[in-house]
Length: 312
Image (cartoon, rainbow, N blue to C red; front, side, top):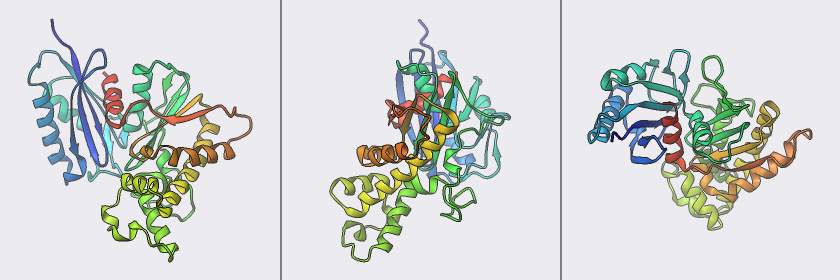
């Protein structure tokens, strides 16, 4: 009997995850590439094609197609266009490259939509109105309204990370200033830590011994759990800004539920508690206070590749 499967790919600013997914939604194989290690799209695609060839080598007959999520996808012409967190210039027709390499259908969507698709197809909750906010290298949102994925004209709906939350604020990789992702992404949290260290001259903690170039969200979480005051404060400030942004999202989309995903959410209650507090403080009073904010049931890599596979 032929075992049918698809390849699901999640292209992120830091990592790219590739999975072989069965028709029932089982992850049969998975692998990861460090996106940032490749200086241009051509080199990246060569390595990606090599990984896929190895992954399908045992059973090429059952290979049905490729579903992919990536930043800054223009769904109208199915290209990746000037992605702020990728080292790729211009517009990349990744569908043509992959379909020519494997002679199978290839479908592409914005990476923030992947977890919405995962919840729609592989979650028992079966909600009709919800959104998923991803907090990683950048920030994105996938939105489900009336049971349908909201894409917008070119597919750029849900660019929550590039909503301006502070006039003349932090410089963003998109070229503007004050974008949400400069405050609540993993990189934004590191910038918060740096500014807090400069602000508090009396601080004597472990962060002073760490080169900022080596610092990441996981380290900040671990330090906060151990009682480091600046790390704890950074998570509180991140939650306060995120909660306000989520309250604004509710005013636009009136969801039943909000899911958070991505590496920053590993801080659990250190982030979720101030996020919820800020959210309910800023929530317009016509909305019910039982709107739930919780971590997505899907982990960082599995949910994204499952969602990508659902495109097929």
